[in-house]
Image (cartoon, rainbow, N blue to C red; front, side, top):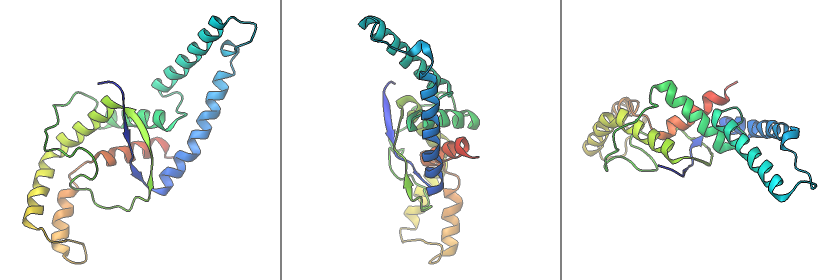
Length: 194
């Protein structure tokens, strides 16, 4: 699978602020890398020489991003963070296909409203997003099935204050579900945590 997939995780304002502070620092690091004389273009060069140097500089920056040495864009930072998180969880491997009954986008069963006030927009490699989706589904499928059955048996609005016992049941099942949003937030939080 090639290409990119947009994601828009909801996060805490603090996490968004940490990201907002980090990107300019990384952009400054990129400027330092590009200040190296080997990437300097002068007008006494031929057009082919200038194009070649610019292409080599872009490739160098892309390689640094791929290795996680330069995280100067939200996309690069999130991609690196998610790869680390998948490795940490032991999820960085191929997963079986995701069945049609799996959530495709938006809110997953078990997503408890945490009042995440901020959003982050990123474009991640499509295969990485697909891996996160598959990992979340396959590690949470049983709990999602139980949540769906629980919801069928309790179609009324259940809140902590209105029905504490039912809410506790729901919450116990929901705690067994890992959503893609959980992965995006945890990946970003671990990378940006001081």
